[in-house]
Amino acid sequence: MNQATCIVCGNKQDLKFELRHNVYHCSVCDLYSSDADFDLSFRSSLEEDSREIGLKQLRLHNFQLIIKELKDNYFKNEAAISGLEIGSGNGWWLEVCKANGIDCMGIEPETTFTPYYKQNNLKVVHGFYPDVAKDSSAGYDFIIFNDVFEHITDLESLLLSIKRDLKKDGVLIVNIPMSNGFFYRVAKALYYLKVKSYLERLWQFSFHSPHINYFNPVNLTAYFDKYGFRLLKDFRLETLDFSSIKERILADNQISKAKAFAISNALMLLKPVIKNTEADIRVFFFRQ
Ligand SMILES: [Zn+2]
Image (tube, rainbow, N blue to C red):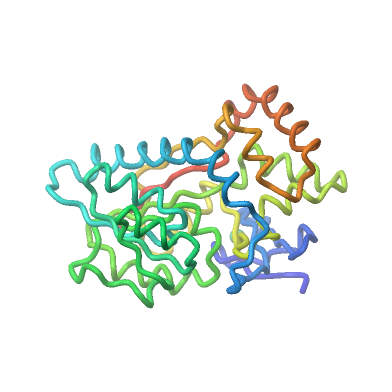
């Protein structure tokens, strides 16, 4: 297959990168899409433990920023806020909600973190959304995707279900990696220098749940607009905690230890550049 159809603008996407899966690009709206699929065996080459060391502090900080935005601007006078997280993974978002008195339910198809949910009294239903949703027949005040939206194949039926499950004045939150960020740009440049592994890594093609789309702020907003969601606000989230960068890169067992140290040293040097270019991850708030 040499072409695909862009889900944002309907134009043809041309084959752009040949990796483990093909990546197609729309020259009109700049959307990148892969022909990868979700591997239901859930086998992954990632070492969960070392990933956790590098990421947790940073993630919790980002989640606090999202909660502050919800409380300050959208649910200022609400006594109780009810939320749904699609794809709860390690449960960190649910933990932060709990600590902030927000009632959020999670849906997660994997069972890796089930014992952790139980230990921490987190409300998580096992399965895929929307098959196992419905906790609140009145609808949710918010629905959130934390690094999940870019992994989903059938976005159309997903968004139609969300329109039904979100309250009319509810907020849809999407926390997602961006194709105009520093790392994606570097990975693209390296690809043309015949180094494909960085782009392969960003698309997570070695993991059981690879990326299906790589959006930028403009085409993501245009895509939600097609389904009647208007953008309230979006802002940058940080991807790198410079204090734990080595552990995080070492967690990737596709990279040799020596190379991991070299990369982490290079990133430390590039810190001012990374902080001053377009964000690698942004969070978007929409209302229908
Ligand atoms: Zn397009």
